[in-house]
Structure formats: structure tokens, C-alpha cells
Image (cartoon, rainbow, N blue to C red):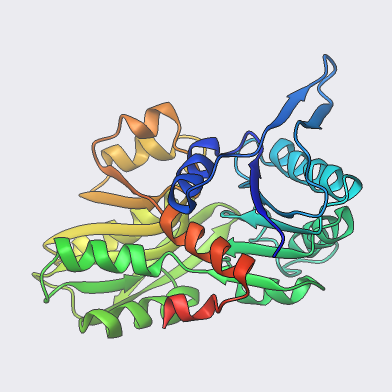
Length: 312
């Protein structure tokens, strides 16, 4: 079997080191810097000929820089005669642009998939894609992992059985229903009307939340608008406490400040994206690590074992 090596760019080195710790290996030696004009410079400082290479890189802020870093690193490994290259993308940027919602707009998620494939990736491992059909945008194998085991364990250990799992919109009902079934709890849905990009207006609550602890479940929190309005709607309908869990903490703009001032009691996120300084200082935000889950998926991919059985 070809030896396993793991590299990372500048997006989330802490997560990459944690993954290496769980696998029991050292992080690969790569230098990813910029020239004086802003062009990205990549240099792989160890031999990867004939090796099974994994590149861990979230396309988080600054999204375009980290995406180009990933593409250039994959190209460098391809030209260095790596046996196989797997792009490990805990957070897949541009995933929300997965279809044409208005005339004359790109399907950016498909373009990014083409770029990753063309650069030389043989396989992709990602987590909690915003839309499952993005897997079909690739012409190479894609393993879409889920943060569910980590979040489910947290909810089981920190909330009582009468907790209500809440979907913040119609699109997240399937995810929330699966959680409610695994936890043997009730389900509620927020009827949300989006009035503009990055702006949403929560209208109504479908389900009984009066006097109960509620947990809003989403795949990501960006500006926090949907989350905060959902929390306010739940409070207006008599919820005792409002908590939230999500896989990806994008937290752009003034999201952290808005969450701090909101009725949310806690927001639980994973480390697919690194938290900014202001988010790390927020008492409401708690971080769970998916490094062990990613490490197991990488190991199984390397050895040819089943990855899907992780989530049975």
C-alpha cells in the first residue's frame, strides 16, 4: 500500500494538526506564501512520488485565496508524481450557489467542482454540503461526511428528553427530522421567507415549542440573520430556552455581535472553519472538534474501508 501523507494550506492548520494527531503521523512539509503582488506561492518540501496524498483545506475567509491555495497545492502534487490526491474540504465554499435562482447568474458550486477536478484531484472528502446534489457536480468520487455524530453526542449529554429540534427553514427539515428521530424528541419548523440575499424574515413556527427547550439545527451560520430571527420566533411562541447547533461557523460581518445580543443561549459549532478572535471571545459560542471524524474517514479512504458505515 502506498504511504499516507497529509498536507494543509493556510485555512485551518489547527484542524490539520489535530487530524494528524489522531492518525498518528506528522503534518506534511509545505510552504504556502504570497509574492509581493499577492500571487500565491506553493512549494512542497518533501518527496511525494508514489504516495497517497491528502490535502486538508477549508475554503473559508478569505475564500478565494484559500481556494487558489488548494488548487495550486493539488497541481504541485500532480506534477510531483503523487499516486493519488484527495482534497479534504471540511467547508466547501460557494456551495450555496448550486442552482440558478435568477436569470444570468453562474452555478458557482459547479465551476469550483470543475476547478478542483481539473487541477488534478482524484477524490474529494467534504462535510455537510449545503446541498447534497453538489456531489454530482464532480466527475470523481466524493465522500460527504456529516457532523451529526459529534452534534448528537453533545445534545444527548447536555439536553433533556423533552427538547424540541427545530429546522430554521423548509430546506433543513430532513436533517432536523433525522436528529429528532435519533434523539426520540419532537420536531418543529420555522416558516421562513427570504426577502434578499443574506436577509431572511422568520414568519411562523410549525410545531409545539411552548415551555420547552429548543435546539435550532442548521448546516451553517453566516451573517446569523436566519438564526436570530428563528430564535426570536421561537421565543414569541413560548420557548423556554433557545439553543443552536451548526456544522460550519462562517460568522461573517457583524454576526458574532448580533449573536451576543440575541435571545440565543448557546451556539454550538464545529471546527471545520477556524473562529475569528471575536468569536473565540464570545461566551455563547462553543466549539466541537470533527478532527477525529475526519481522521477516521481519511484512514478508511486510504485503506479502502467503508466510509459510509461511519454514519450508520
